Amino acid sequence: MLCLFLTFALTFYWIFIDDTLRLSGRFPLYVKEPAKELQ
Image (cartoon, rainbow, N blue to C red; front, side, top):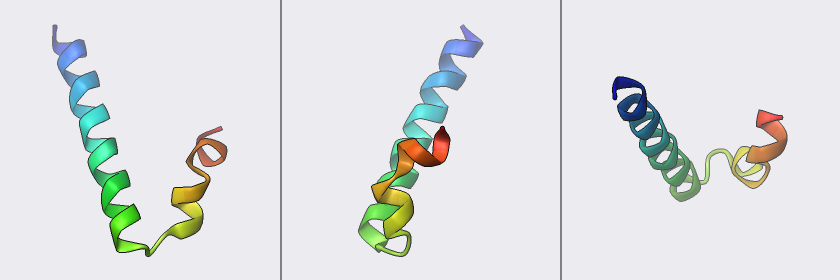
């Protein structure tokens, strides 16, 4: 149950940060290529 909560929290946190970066426009390259950065 704790693992599920942590997964949900991390996912929500990541989405929130990603949207913030998109709105701020300070990291356009990072926002455009998130998959390549992770892989």
